[in-house]
Image (cartoon, rainbow, N blue to C red):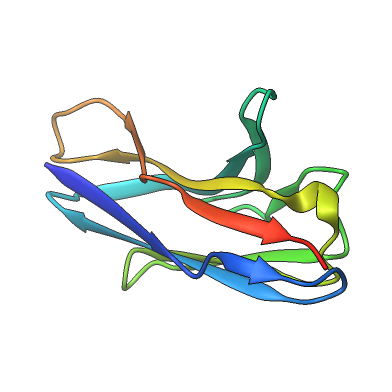
Length: 121
């Protein structure tokens, strides 16, 4: 079994910063991708940033230059540093990973429970 635990959400004023953290634990053999998605009320879940193994991070156009994703392979963690936050960044943010639990299993997706980020004055 694999668990993703997120932390760091909260209420912040426009222009402020927050850092989200996600730690993957459990039966982990290899992680291919770690990413952050978000879902605002009435909207579909959308990709915010992803950091596959061995390649540069990829960001949604709406967050380029403001958000930074970073991964620690030794600790199986991924952080999302969010700067210059805007009200339209308000959403539930979900951690995502694609991994193998053993050498013989297929790559499988896992999601965190989500953490609320609210940007408001």
